Image 1 (cartoon, rainbow, N blue to C red):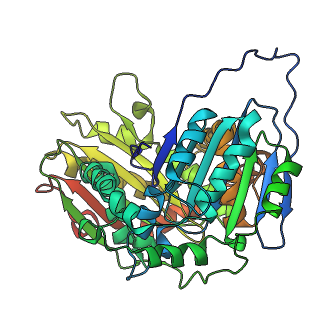
Image 2 (spheres, rainbow, N blue to C red; image 1 turned 180 degrees about the horizontal axis):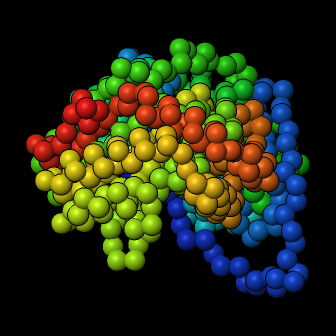
Length: 463
C-alpha cells in the first residue's frame, strides 16, 4: 500500500492518503447520441441517522464518497493530531479485512480509494468500475466503520507520518494557511491538519477507537454516490449493523479573534515570502452571504503568478501590485475558506522578501478602496466568474458527490447548481458594499512564512 500526500495550494486545506491502481479501460465507448442522461438526485435517511444521496449518471465509473463530521476542529488538548493519524492509517486491518486483502482487492478492480481531511470533515472517496462497486464498497465500509487500529500497525505507520510531516515542513503555502487559522480562530478551527512531531507515537489505539465511535456515527455521516443504483446502495447500508446511531456533541463553536492575531513562521530556505490577511466570513450555513463573499473574491481577483498575458494584469489586486513596479515575480489574489458556521475571507501575497512589504500594502489599500463601491460591469463579471467556478465543479462527478455530502452536513440539504445561480443573481451592489465596509472596519488577522526580516507586522499595515 502506498501513501501520497497531496500538494497543498494556498487555498487547499485538506490532506489525503490513497491506494489505487489504474482502472481498466471499457471495451466500448457509448455514442454521444445513445448516452443516457443523468437521473434526479435520490435521498434516503436510515433509522440510524445515516443519510444516503445518489444520482445514476450511467457512467462506467462509479464514485462513492463518505463524509463525516470528524475533522481536526473536533480534536481537543488530549488528542491533537489524531485526525492526521486517522487518515494516514486508512486501509489498515479492520474487523473483517486485512491490509493485504483491502489493497489487493481494490487493485484487482482497478479502484482508487483514499482518505482526506479538512478542519470540518473526514472524507473517504472510492472510484472504481461500476461492475465491481459492490465489492469495493464493502472494503470501504470496513475502513470507515470497522477499523481495528492494531498497536503494532500504528507503530509501523510512524515512518509514513514522518514523511508527510517532512513534506509539510517544506510546503510554504500549507504552513501559511495553518498559521493563518491559528492566528484567526480560538477553538477547534485553530487546530492544524498535521500532528506535531513530538506527538508521533503518542496517539493510542484507545483514543482512535473512542474518537471514531463517537464521531463516525449515523447522524454525523453522509454517503453520496454517482453512477450507482440507489436501491442497491440503500440495501448495503441497511444491512450494515456496525454504524452507531448515537451522536457526539460538537462542543463549543470556534470564534474569530476579533482583536487581530498574528503568526510568523521563519523559513530561511524559501526564495519567496508569503503573507495572508483575513477577516471572518460567513459559514456555509448562510448560503447567500457565503456566495456574496465568493463574488467579492472574483471582484478583487484570484491568485495568479505574474507571467506575460496572465489574468493577473486584469484584476484589481494585480493592477495595484503592478503599479508598485516590483522587480521580481509575485502573486496576489483573494481567497475564501468556508466552514460550517464561520469562515475566512482574505488576500494572499507571495513576493520577493525585499518587495513583500510594498506588494502587501498595495493589496490592503485595494481592499479598503472596495468600500467606495463597484461598477455594474465589475459586479456582473464577478457573478459570471462565480457561476463558472460552480459549474466547473459540477462537471467532475467525484467533486459533485463530495460537495453533496458536505452541503448535507453543513446546510441540511444539497445545493443545486440552479439554486446557486439564483442566489448569485440576487446578490446586489448593496450586499457587496456591506461586505466591503466590514472589511475596512474589522481588524484582520495575519500570517507570514518565509524570510520575514522586511515583512511588515499587522500594526504597520493598519497605520
